[in-house]
Length: 321
Image (tube, rainbow, N blue to C red):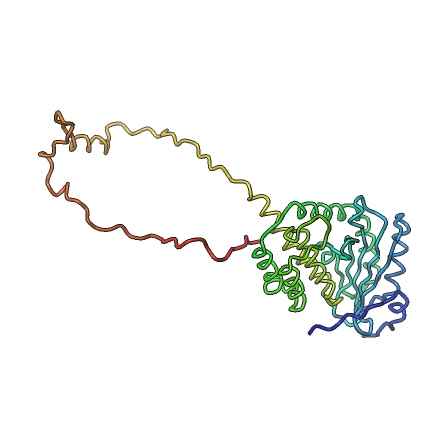
């Protein structure tokens, strides 16, 4: 059984967690300094915070902050800013733009956060500020990418076998879902649970939300990487499936014989013509007296079996992503 994440984490609680002194080159970034800087940068850019939420491990050494903004062109996809920080050297500081889905209460973000992770050494505070500013400057671009991913998934669907294989890959290959999370996804698939209005359970966007619901159980230390890995696997698979759904017409240009034969060279066809000059009788039968009998002996050996088909395959092989 995985450890439960404490609920009801507030800004005041995180700000009260004592900043440890590890000594050496490790420079912890205080939760309070991050919270204050995020609010400052959001205000400077005209973003209004509709709601701020926090997650943390027991003791508050590892924390996530989420700020749902009034920015965004789609009412079903609210822009949010997220960050992650640790006091126990278990996670680098990271931040980025994500999306909050009001109808399911889920959060989604791609791999941008990991790209802007910073180890707590040297001028970590200054570089964290630069990361916050950089991500907010790219907020609209990241938001548009996530909305596009949603639109792509809404137009896609798959069988329970495909979803089972994708979930298995998340659990075994990517290790971005644990046993408890896989069980929750399985239960929704088996019971054909539809989480969104007017969208069938077999829709790819519904499946994504089933996974995102399970990811809410992730530890704050792993949440960003788990979410990004699941997002990448799902969107890449359905993007590839969409591209390969239409049959590809195999058109081959006719081969033209543009090679000139050298002069004074004997052609194989001339040899054949000299040897084989069949004569037809009145019944159009071939006269064979001029050929050795061995030439016309029937071949009685059976053809070799190159392969055998025993019916439809029982498993699918997903494309390499």
